[in-house]
Amino acid sequence: MHSGDTALSERDQQILALERHWWKYAGAKEQAIRDLFDLSSTHYYQILNALIDTEDALAFDPMLVKRLRRLRTTRQRARTARRLGN
Image (cartoon, rainbow, N blue to C red; front, side, top):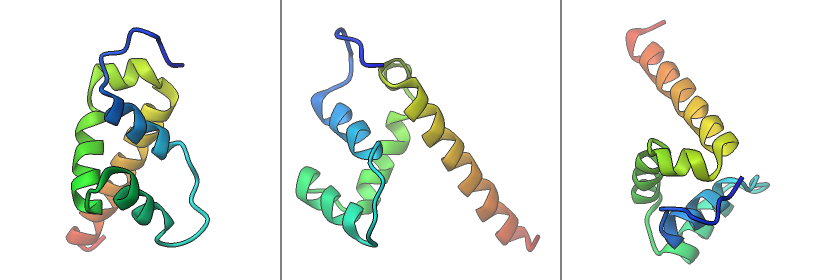
């Protein structure tokens, strides 16, 4: 899963580690984002979306990155359908 020779920064690795967690309570993940990275949720998700498009992230944790890509695609399709009134 995690190769020793990764081109990912420590922060990128920490972001992927955070994404492996399941959050039981509303707001817990957003609080963790603020505490760990000192980022707004919006900025965090911008970084995450760029990160999961990289080959380095895919090589680092293929299953997680593929799952995150699928979730993103599903959400994008749902937003598009709502906008189109479907």
